[in-house]
Each structure stands twice: as C-alpha cells, then as structure tokens.
Amino acid sequence: MLTSDFRPMFQTTRRRLAIWYTTVTAILLLVFATTVYLYVRSTLIDRVDDTLKHVVEVVSRSIALENQQHHPFQPDIERSVRNNASSLEEDRIDLEWFSPNGELLWSTLSEPLDIPLSTTSTPQTVYRPSQFAPERSATPQRFPGLGNVRSESRPVLRQITKPIKIDRQPLGYLRVSHPWFEISKPSRDFVIDLSFGFIVMVTSVAAIGWWLSGLAMNPVRESYQRLKQFTADASHELRSPIASIQTNVQVALAEPETVQGSCFQQLQTIERLTRRLGRLVDDLLFLTRQDSGMVQSQKETVSLEAVLIEAIEEQEAIAIEKQVELQVDIVEPPSQPDATFGLYGDRDRLVRLFANLLGNAVLYTPPGGTVTASLKYVTTKQGSALQARVEDTGIGISPDALPHVFDRFYRADPARSHDASHRVGSGLGLAIARAIVDNHSGEISIESEVDRGTVVTVCFPLLH
Image (cartoon, rainbow, N blue to C red; front, top):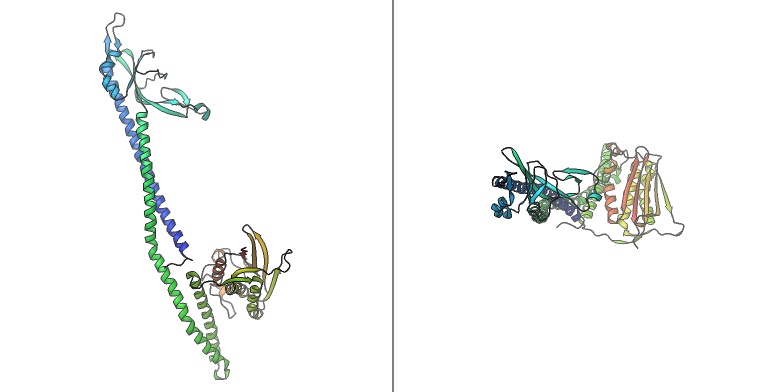
C-alpha cells in the first residue's frame, strides 16, 4: 500500500499521463472533425452548384419566344417557368430575367435583390452586409456581384448568371439563385453533432486515460514500494552487525598494549570507517522511515533557540579540532525582548536538522574559518516566520551543482569529500534536512559562491 507521503507524487504523474492522453486525442479528433466538416460543406456547395447549372441549362433550353413584329425573338419567361415550376419549387430556386442592358424585367422573388448583375458564368456566393458591418470594420472587400462591402458580411445566396443568345443575338441574362441557408443550416446542424460527439469522445478518452495511466503506474508504484521496504529492512539489519564491529574495535583500541605496530592503525581505520558506515545506515533508515511514514512525528512546542544551541554544542568539539570558530547570533524583536522562539515541531528531528547543517558547514570550512548560526523573526508573504541561517566561510558550491545539492547521495564536487578529517560526507545530509523542513511545513534554500562560503536559510511559519 502506498503511503500518504508519496501518493501525491504518483497521483501527479498519473494526472499528467491522463492529460497527455486526452490532449493528444483531442487534437487528433479536432483535426479529423475539421476535415470532415470542410468536406461536407464543400460537398453541399458542389451539390447546390450542380443544381444551379442544371436549372440554368433546362430553363435556357425551354425558353419560349413570343412572335412579335418588332421583336421576333422576345422570350416568354413566364410560360417557360411554368413548364419547370415543379422542379424550381422542389429545389427552392428563384429566377431573374434581365434585358441585354442589365435591366431587371421579371423575377420570381417577392422583393428585388438589388444586387448588380454579374456576367460571370461560374457559381458565386452573394454576400449581404450585416447590420453592424460599417461600424465594425473599415476594410472594404469586393464580393462578386455586390460591389464594395465590409468584411463583416454574411452569405445569403448562391447564384449563377448565364447570357442567353439565339443566333448570336443576345436575348438577355438569366440569373438563378439558391438560398444559402440550404447550405448553412445543414452545416450548422453538422457542427452541433460534431461538437457533441467531440465532447463525448474527449470525456470518454479522459476517463479511459485516467484508468490506463493508473494501470501503467501500478508496476512503478509496486517496484518503488518494494525498493523502500528493502532499504528499510537492509538498513535495520545492518545496524546490529555494524554496532557489534564498532564495539569490538573500540574495546581493542582501549587496550593498546594488546595491539602491536601497524595493527593499531588498521584498527583505527576500521573504527573510523565503521562509524561512517553506521551514520550512513542511520541516515538511510531515517529517510526510508520518513518517506514511508512508519514513524510519526512527536510534535510539541519547542524553543528553536534551545534546539540551535544544542546542535552547536554537538559540533563544538569537531569545530575546535578543525580550528573553525562557531558563532551564534540570536536577534530578538524589539517588541518581544524575552522572545522564546517557540515552534510547534519534533524536537529530535529539529536537532538533527541543525546538526546536519552545522556539520556540513564545519566539514567544508578550512581551518581559521567561521561558521555562524543566526535566528530571528521575519515577515513573509504568508505571515510571521522564524528564520534560521547557517553561514560559513568555506569552499562554497559551484552554480552548476547548486540546484542538485538536496538530491540524495549527490556531492557538489568530488574534491569536497577528500577531506583530511575523519568525517566524510555521505551525500544525505541536505536531503535529510529538506525532509525535516518539509515535515514542518517550512522552506529551505541555499546560496553559495565558490571560495566565498555558503548560506543555508530555513524558515518555519508560525502557526497560530
């Protein structure tokens, strides 16, 4: 069973996978739906154009001519239209007849279109300016048969115009119109259907993606859980033999008369390495328990000032051995001269936090350097907070390594571990520090310059 500490991490990964599934599928569906819509709309326009061409051809062939003395080729449009009335009504077709001079002589429309005659024989879309077109746009755009109109226009008709001639003598112009809503209405209905289908598909894919991402994360979750359990078990089992070895070595070193020559130095080396290995096992066990939540924090109101002083006392002997000066700077607020620097937290873990920070500072500060620990109240965006800083004049950390210093087993520079002291860093100190700070809802940051020193800042919010 995954612990609560790492469940958010796996949930975030699962959520990202589901979002990627949904996003990619939505893009593909959108491209597909757009392509299908354009194809259907183009098909509707082609069908209307074919109808217009067919009507023009039929009507032009069936035009009846009146036998008049002055105009022997005067067409009788009304009689010609009556012969094709059923076809025109079925296809919602309207006809207009113009004289050779472009004058409207006859129309099936209830009101004239008042659209200039176009002599183009190909089907065209006629646009009518919308009500707010003149105010919305100042860019004129020419549309066939309608002169200069604003770009804020909407199509109303699909038209075709054909000049009618007999024996090369022009009789006039026949203009056939088809309402645009026969195209726009099916297109709009199709868009609504596509939108509904798109929403249903994306929702389904999101649900399926969430389910599939959960299946994909299960092996990772189980492997991670087994790895944590193995680390915890191994760390726990190693503590006893390491402690036994260290005890026996220390007993042998306590009686130097029983150890001869180089054996004494070898035992010292074994004791030092065993102590280092013991610290490493303790750190691993702490991090594993912290990750898995096997040990609950025993929080209470503690004095951060007392915790900091206790951590300094633990490191004082090592600092004296390395000839590093330890300084303390407690800044009490003027409004609270007897401030206790109280914090609700786990005292043991807070001591370990500052012991790690001070230990790193002492370890990487050359002889003659200074390590300063300070504590004060500050005001942040979230409210009042306690700020603790550990500043040293050590060798510093390079800018490239700075973003990785909180990673487990990461060492900023291999040369930093080749210290002449008996203490050698394991690469877990800052990882443990961050875990403790996170457990107390705090923030930790680090600033450093090579050969200038390092400053670690920890802020704990004051919970009222």
